[in-house]
Image (tube, rainbow, N blue to C red; front, side):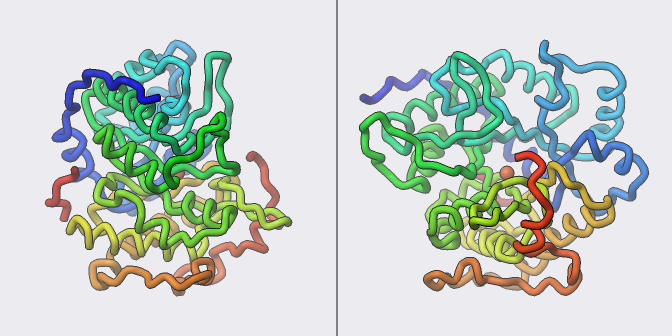
Length: 356
Ligand SMILES: [Fe+2]
Protein backbone atom coordinates (compact mmCIF):
# COMPACT_ATOMS: atom_id res chain seq x y z
CA UNK A 1 0.00 0.00 0.00
CA UNK A 2 1.28 3.46 -0.85
CA UNK A 3 0.33 6.13 1.61
CA UNK A 4 -0.75 9.60 0.49
CA UNK A 5 1.80 12.32 0.98
CA UNK A 6 1.05 15.46 2.92
CA UNK A 7 0.83 18.77 1.11
CA UNK A 8 4.05 19.90 2.72
CA UNK A 9 5.46 23.35 2.29
CA UNK A 10 9.18 23.40 1.46
CA UNK A 11 11.06 24.11 4.68
CA UNK A 12 13.68 26.79 4.72
CA UNK A 13 16.94 25.38 3.41
CA UNK A 14 18.69 28.69 3.86
CA UNK A 15 18.50 28.72 7.65
CA UNK A 16 19.84 25.15 7.96
CA UNK A 17 22.63 25.73 5.43
CA UNK A 18 23.59 28.95 7.24
CA UNK A 19 23.68 27.14 10.58
CA UNK A 20 25.95 24.42 9.19
CA UNK A 21 28.32 26.96 7.63
CA UNK A 22 28.60 28.66 11.00
CA UNK A 23 29.53 25.36 12.64
CA UNK A 24 32.22 23.15 11.10
CA UNK A 25 35.15 21.71 12.98
CA UNK A 26 35.02 19.32 15.91
CA UNK A 27 32.56 19.21 18.78
CA UNK A 28 31.63 17.33 21.93
CA UNK A 29 28.39 16.04 23.39
CA UNK A 30 27.26 18.40 26.17
CA UNK A 31 26.49 16.33 29.24
CA UNK A 32 25.22 17.43 32.62
CA UNK A 33 27.81 15.12 34.20
CA UNK A 34 30.56 17.24 32.62
CA UNK A 35 29.22 20.64 33.68
CA UNK A 36 31.55 21.11 36.63
CA UNK A 37 34.68 20.11 34.67
CA UNK A 38 33.66 22.13 31.62
CA UNK A 39 33.17 25.19 33.80
CA UNK A 40 36.87 25.03 34.76
CA UNK A 41 38.44 23.73 31.51
CA UNK A 42 39.92 25.59 28.56
CA UNK A 43 37.30 24.79 25.91
CA UNK A 44 38.97 26.70 23.07
CA UNK A 45 39.72 23.44 21.19
CA UNK A 46 36.03 22.52 21.08
CA UNK A 47 34.33 24.22 18.13
CA UNK A 48 30.77 23.42 19.19
CA UNK A 49 28.70 21.35 21.58
CA UNK A 50 25.84 18.99 20.91
CA UNK A 51 22.84 18.91 23.22
CA UNK A 52 19.83 16.65 23.44
CA UNK A 53 16.92 18.94 24.34
CA UNK A 54 14.95 16.11 25.96
CA UNK A 55 17.63 15.88 28.64
CA UNK A 56 17.09 19.51 29.61
CA UNK A 57 13.31 19.97 29.31
CA UNK A 58 10.89 18.91 32.03
CA UNK A 59 7.75 16.86 31.41
CA UNK A 60 5.92 20.04 30.42
CA UNK A 61 8.53 20.76 27.78
CA UNK A 62 9.85 23.73 29.74
CA UNK A 63 13.13 24.45 31.43
CA UNK A 64 14.08 26.60 34.31
CA UNK A 65 16.04 26.78 37.54
CA UNK A 66 19.72 26.34 38.11
CA UNK A 67 20.44 24.10 35.11
CA UNK A 68 18.82 26.58 32.73
CA UNK A 69 21.12 29.36 33.94
CA UNK A 70 24.18 27.12 33.65
CA UNK A 71 23.21 25.99 30.17
CA UNK A 72 22.47 29.56 29.08
CA UNK A 73 25.94 30.63 30.18
CA UNK A 74 27.39 28.01 27.79
CA UNK A 75 25.03 28.63 24.84
CA UNK A 76 25.82 32.35 25.03
CA UNK A 77 29.52 31.61 24.59
CA UNK A 78 29.65 28.54 22.31
CA UNK A 79 27.87 27.26 19.17
CA UNK A 80 25.48 24.36 19.84
CA UNK A 81 23.70 21.68 17.80
CA UNK A 82 20.42 20.04 18.86
CA UNK A 83 20.35 16.26 18.58
CA UNK A 84 16.97 14.80 19.54
CA UNK A 85 16.35 11.44 21.17
CA UNK A 86 12.63 10.75 21.30
CA UNK A 87 10.93 12.05 18.15
CA UNK A 88 10.41 8.45 17.03
CA UNK A 89 10.06 9.42 13.40
CA UNK A 90 9.39 5.83 12.28
CA UNK A 91 6.59 5.21 14.76
CA UNK A 92 3.01 4.48 13.76
CA UNK A 93 1.83 6.65 16.68
CA UNK A 94 0.85 10.25 15.88
CA UNK A 95 3.82 12.57 15.34
CA UNK A 96 4.73 14.34 18.58
CA UNK A 97 4.05 17.87 17.40
CA UNK A 98 4.13 19.22 20.97
CA UNK A 99 7.71 17.95 21.35
CA UNK A 100 8.69 19.60 18.06
CA UNK A 101 7.20 22.93 19.15
CA UNK A 102 9.09 22.70 22.44
CA UNK A 103 12.30 21.90 20.56
CA UNK A 104 11.73 24.85 18.26
CA UNK A 105 11.32 27.14 21.27
CA UNK A 106 14.42 25.59 22.90
CA UNK A 107 16.45 26.24 19.73
CA UNK A 108 15.23 29.84 19.54
CA UNK A 109 16.00 30.44 23.22
CA UNK A 110 19.54 29.15 22.82
CA UNK A 111 20.10 30.40 19.25
CA UNK A 112 20.69 26.89 17.86
CA UNK A 113 20.37 26.49 14.10
CA UNK A 114 20.76 22.76 13.41
CA UNK A 115 18.54 19.91 14.62
CA UNK A 116 19.12 16.24 13.91
CA UNK A 117 17.33 13.04 14.96
CA UNK A 118 17.52 9.29 14.42
CA UNK A 119 16.06 7.43 11.47
CA UNK A 120 14.42 4.90 13.77
CA UNK A 121 11.50 4.57 16.16
CA UNK A 122 11.26 4.19 19.92
CA UNK A 123 7.57 4.47 20.80
CA UNK A 124 4.04 3.50 19.93
CA UNK A 125 0.67 4.54 21.32
CA UNK A 126 1.41 2.70 24.60
CA UNK A 127 4.65 4.46 25.49
CA UNK A 128 8.37 5.02 24.92
CA UNK A 129 11.35 2.67 24.96
CA UNK A 130 14.94 3.61 25.65
CA UNK A 131 16.09 1.69 22.57
CA UNK A 132 16.11 3.04 19.04
CA UNK A 133 14.58 0.41 16.78
CA UNK A 134 15.11 -0.10 13.03
CA UNK A 135 12.42 0.71 10.47
CA UNK A 136 11.46 -1.98 7.93
CA UNK A 137 13.05 -1.17 4.57
CA UNK A 138 9.83 -1.19 2.55
CA UNK A 139 8.38 1.26 0.05
CA UNK A 140 5.42 1.84 2.34
CA UNK A 141 7.77 2.80 5.18
CA UNK A 142 9.65 5.22 2.92
CA UNK A 143 6.47 7.20 2.26
CA UNK A 144 5.27 6.91 5.84
CA UNK A 145 8.52 8.17 7.35
CA UNK A 146 9.15 10.81 4.67
CA UNK A 147 5.66 12.23 5.26
CA UNK A 148 6.36 12.52 8.98
CA UNK A 149 9.75 14.14 8.31
CA UNK A 150 8.06 16.69 6.07
CA UNK A 151 5.59 17.49 8.83
CA UNK A 152 8.44 17.85 11.34
CA UNK A 153 10.42 20.09 8.97
CA UNK A 154 7.30 22.23 8.41
CA UNK A 155 6.87 22.72 12.16
CA UNK A 156 10.52 23.61 12.69
CA UNK A 157 10.61 25.65 9.48
CA UNK A 158 13.91 24.10 8.42
CA UNK A 159 15.52 20.92 7.16
CA UNK A 160 16.39 18.21 9.69
CA UNK A 161 19.32 15.80 9.54
CA UNK A 162 18.46 12.13 10.14
CA UNK A 163 21.04 9.76 11.54
CA UNK A 164 21.78 6.25 10.30
CA UNK A 165 21.19 4.21 13.44
CA UNK A 166 22.83 1.15 14.96
CA UNK A 167 20.55 -1.88 15.26
CA UNK A 168 20.69 -5.42 16.54
CA UNK A 169 17.97 -7.22 14.57
CA UNK A 170 16.25 -7.01 11.21
CA UNK A 171 12.79 -5.57 11.73
CA UNK A 172 9.75 -7.73 10.96
CA UNK A 173 7.81 -6.64 7.90
CA UNK A 174 4.51 -8.45 8.55
CA UNK A 175 5.10 -10.79 5.67
CA UNK A 176 6.09 -8.02 3.25
CA UNK A 177 9.57 -8.59 1.86
CA UNK A 178 12.11 -5.84 2.31
CA UNK A 179 12.08 -3.97 -0.99
CA UNK A 180 15.48 -2.39 -0.62
CA UNK A 181 18.70 -2.44 1.33
CA UNK A 182 19.19 -0.37 4.44
CA UNK A 183 21.34 2.14 2.53
CA UNK A 184 18.79 2.35 -0.29
CA UNK A 185 16.09 2.97 2.30
CA UNK A 186 18.03 5.88 3.81
CA UNK A 187 18.56 7.39 0.34
CA UNK A 188 14.91 6.95 -0.61
CA UNK A 189 13.67 8.61 2.59
CA UNK A 190 16.14 11.49 2.24
CA UNK A 191 15.12 12.10 -1.37
CA UNK A 192 11.39 11.83 -0.68
CA UNK A 193 11.49 14.07 2.39
CA UNK A 194 14.23 16.36 1.09
CA UNK A 195 15.92 16.09 4.47
CA UNK A 196 19.61 15.91 5.33
CA UNK A 197 21.88 13.06 6.39
CA UNK A 198 23.40 12.95 9.83
CA UNK A 199 26.21 10.45 9.26
CA UNK A 200 27.32 8.33 12.21
CA UNK A 201 30.42 6.38 11.20
CA UNK A 202 30.55 4.39 14.43
CA UNK A 203 27.01 3.14 13.82
CA UNK A 204 28.11 1.92 10.38
CA UNK A 205 31.07 0.13 11.94
CA UNK A 206 28.96 -1.47 14.68
CA UNK A 207 26.36 -2.74 12.20
CA UNK A 208 29.04 -3.95 9.77
CA UNK A 209 30.68 -6.06 12.46
CA UNK A 210 27.44 -7.43 13.87
CA UNK A 211 25.91 -8.22 10.48
CA UNK A 212 29.04 -9.01 8.47
CA UNK A 213 29.27 -6.44 5.72
CA UNK A 214 32.00 -4.05 4.55
CA UNK A 215 31.59 -0.70 6.27
CA UNK A 216 33.46 1.24 3.58
CA UNK A 217 31.32 -0.25 0.80
CA UNK A 218 28.19 0.61 2.76
CA UNK A 219 29.38 4.18 3.28
CA UNK A 220 29.57 4.65 -0.51
CA UNK A 221 25.91 3.71 -0.88
CA UNK A 222 24.63 6.50 1.38
CA UNK A 223 23.41 9.90 0.11
CA UNK A 224 26.63 11.56 1.28
CA UNK A 225 25.89 14.72 -0.73
CA UNK A 226 23.20 15.41 1.87
CA UNK A 227 25.56 15.18 4.86
CA UNK A 228 25.01 18.02 7.31
CA UNK A 229 26.65 16.61 10.41
CA UNK A 230 28.72 13.63 11.61
CA UNK A 231 29.10 11.52 14.73
CA UNK A 232 32.04 9.48 15.89
CA UNK A 233 32.02 7.39 19.05
CA UNK A 234 33.38 4.40 20.92
CA UNK A 235 31.55 1.16 21.54
CA UNK A 236 31.72 -2.03 23.61
CA UNK A 237 32.56 -5.53 22.41
CA UNK A 238 31.00 -8.36 24.37
CA UNK A 239 32.72 -11.71 24.91
CA UNK A 240 30.74 -13.35 22.13
CA UNK A 241 31.83 -10.63 19.70
CA UNK A 242 28.60 -8.66 19.65
CA UNK A 243 29.36 -4.94 19.44
CA UNK A 244 27.12 -2.61 21.43
CA UNK A 245 26.92 1.07 20.53
CA UNK A 246 27.49 2.41 24.03
CA UNK A 247 29.35 5.71 23.55
CA UNK A 248 31.22 4.67 26.69
CA UNK A 249 34.77 4.20 25.36
CA UNK A 250 37.38 5.83 23.16
CA UNK A 251 37.05 5.73 19.37
CA UNK A 252 38.97 2.86 17.79
CA UNK A 253 41.19 3.06 14.69
CA UNK A 254 38.82 1.39 12.17
CA UNK A 255 36.19 3.97 13.06
CA UNK A 256 38.67 6.82 12.63
CA UNK A 257 39.54 5.30 9.22
CA UNK A 258 35.86 5.28 8.30
CA UNK A 259 35.58 8.94 9.30
CA UNK A 260 38.56 9.83 7.09
CA UNK A 261 36.99 7.92 4.22
CA UNK A 262 33.71 9.78 4.73
CA UNK A 263 35.51 13.15 4.60
CA UNK A 264 37.23 12.21 1.32
CA UNK A 265 34.03 10.88 -0.27
CA UNK A 266 31.95 13.92 0.73
CA UNK A 267 34.64 16.22 -0.62
CA UNK A 268 34.66 14.27 -3.89
CA UNK A 269 30.87 14.51 -4.18
CA UNK A 270 30.27 18.07 -3.00
CA UNK A 271 33.58 19.90 -2.85
CA UNK A 272 33.02 20.58 0.83
CA UNK A 273 36.24 20.28 2.85
CA UNK A 274 36.26 18.21 6.02
CA UNK A 275 36.63 21.26 8.24
CA UNK A 276 33.23 22.44 6.98
CA UNK A 277 31.63 19.20 8.16
CA UNK A 278 30.76 19.57 11.85
CA UNK A 279 31.75 16.33 13.56
CA UNK A 280 30.83 15.51 17.13
CA UNK A 281 32.45 13.09 19.56
CA UNK A 282 29.69 11.26 21.40
CA UNK A 283 30.55 10.23 24.95
CA UNK A 284 27.65 9.36 27.22
CA UNK A 285 29.17 7.60 30.24
CA UNK A 286 32.41 6.15 31.62
CA UNK A 287 33.89 9.62 31.18
CA UNK A 288 37.68 10.08 31.02
CA UNK A 289 39.26 13.33 32.15
CA UNK A 290 38.26 16.52 30.37
CA UNK A 291 41.82 16.75 28.98
CA UNK A 292 41.46 13.30 27.39
CA UNK A 293 38.08 14.21 25.91
CA UNK A 294 39.54 17.41 24.46
CA UNK A 295 42.46 15.39 23.00
CA UNK A 296 39.97 13.10 21.28
CA UNK A 297 38.00 16.06 19.91
CA UNK A 298 41.27 17.57 18.70
CA UNK A 299 42.03 14.35 16.86
CA UNK A 300 38.83 14.87 14.82
CA UNK A 301 40.20 18.27 13.75
CA UNK A 302 43.55 16.66 12.95
CA UNK A 303 41.80 14.23 10.59
CA UNK A 304 39.91 17.12 9.01
CA UNK A 305 43.18 18.94 8.34
CA UNK A 306 44.81 15.77 7.02
CA UNK A 307 41.93 15.26 4.60
CA UNK A 308 42.67 18.68 3.05
CA UNK A 309 45.98 17.32 1.82
CA UNK A 310 44.67 13.92 0.76
CA UNK A 311 41.70 13.39 -1.52
CA UNK A 312 42.03 9.63 -1.71
CA UNK A 313 39.20 7.69 -0.14
CA UNK A 314 39.96 4.39 1.55
CA UNK A 315 40.30 1.50 -0.90
CA UNK A 316 38.09 -1.28 0.31
CA UNK A 317 39.32 -4.88 0.15
CA UNK A 318 37.03 -7.75 0.91
CA UNK A 319 37.05 -8.57 4.57
CA UNK A 320 39.62 -5.96 5.40
CA UNK A 321 37.39 -3.26 6.82
CA UNK A 322 38.03 -4.14 10.43
CA UNK A 323 41.76 -4.31 9.80
CA UNK A 324 41.94 -0.77 8.44
CA UNK A 325 44.11 1.29 10.72
CA UNK A 326 45.09 4.89 10.98
CA UNK A 327 48.30 5.70 12.73
CA UNK A 328 47.57 7.87 15.67
CA UNK A 329 50.86 8.55 17.42
CA UNK A 330 49.55 11.45 19.46
CA UNK A 331 47.15 9.16 21.24
CA UNK A 332 49.54 6.26 21.65
CA UNK A 333 48.64 4.35 24.78
CA UNK A 334 45.47 6.35 25.14
CA UNK A 335 43.11 4.65 22.70
CA UNK A 336 41.29 1.60 23.83
CA UNK A 337 41.30 -1.60 21.87
CA UNK A 338 38.51 -4.13 21.82
CA UNK A 339 39.99 -6.38 24.48
CA UNK A 340 40.37 -3.44 26.85
CA UNK A 341 36.80 -2.45 26.13
CA UNK A 342 35.61 -5.91 27.06
CA UNK A 343 37.26 -5.50 30.45
CA UNK A 344 35.60 -2.18 31.15
CA UNK A 345 32.16 -3.63 31.63
CA UNK A 346 28.99 -2.26 30.13
CA UNK A 347 27.26 0.09 32.51
CA UNK A 348 24.18 0.87 30.47
CA UNK A 349 23.36 -0.27 27.76
CA UNK A 350 35.70 26.75 3.87
CA UNK A 351 32.21 26.05 3.87
CA UNK A 352 31.16 27.83 0.66
CA UNK A 353 29.35 24.89 -0.86
CA UNK A 354 25.61 24.62 -0.60
CA UNK A 355 23.78 21.66 0.78
CA UNK A 356 21.04 19.98 -1.15
FE1 LIG B 1 25.25 8.95 16.83
